Length: 480
Image (cartoon, rainbow, N blue to C red; front, side, top):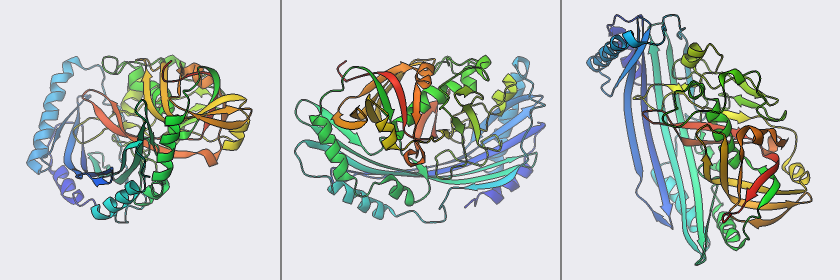
């Protein structure tokens, strides 16, 4: 672990520059993705990537250059390219960053259970094959897949203020899906959708509940095939954590990214309905809504000690009792706007510069069990596991579809319905939050594929949430 550190540190000390500040961020990433589809093992997808980003601050202008040549000449050449870029930018610079603070921290951050070896390819394929073979034989079950992804990342950050920050992390992504078809309709049921990823080792597979799940997921796919379509109208909506994850991501996470609010994403992924003047004033949701930036849950995907600019990360409330308090803005956006923020300046790899990104964005647990949530609903519907989403450029009006629906009548779960969808407007929707599940309903989830930025960056994001109830939401079926 960190075997490149001594050599990088030696090279860094030998670099020559006229910049008042410079830094190096080294990233080495290796990964594997394994799949067994209909009892047939597919070839493994293996990856490896390694390189470094050099950043300079020259006459108050910050610029960067990246290289996959981490020899001293390679790093020196990248540093000189960054200097040249800073000089070219200087006549057009909008900001003078000479007074922006820089990190001098020395720290390590490790994923939990990193010292435990991960199962071999052979063992992983055996596990996936067993789960695939456990799917029952039924002519209506036309496709099924068990899969397992794993990524290992080592990152080293050095700067001329004395910072030495090292992170070693392992990310694990189990998956299982089954598709049923009756000649007219097809329905897919997955275990957690694409929303389950955590840091750790083989214990992530156990927490996911992959072993033994095949028959249950297959049965649910068949139930959906036989179920009636979701009725249309206004109902109370109970969302389980695997759907809450997307709800948080799209209608809280992206709208609160400060660079988006400042206009940086306008020509690519849109803007935000949130304005800078809303912080401290806007009632974003009901008083039951408490949203945190929380890098302290060890197994969550975006837990870390420092962000990619070297800012130390700590848990902070973005929304408390429904009131909007703080944006998702890293050090540069904070400096630009004069607003507070969090340590969420992140890059997807060595060849991308850090930008404001969601990290672990969570809803704090409430005080009701799942049974209590259901009992409190007279006329409603439970929805689980996202399968479709659409939201406008300002992250305001949305329409989301789920895999699984169950009607709730007079405080009891009733029959399964298929093609459940709902639509609303973000801030109005969160103000309809009427009940929040307790710790027994709370799940730590995450996705590896949040995209943002030009050039595009696909990054890991964590969302943890309890089950939540929203009053009087417009729901409809797939043919509405």
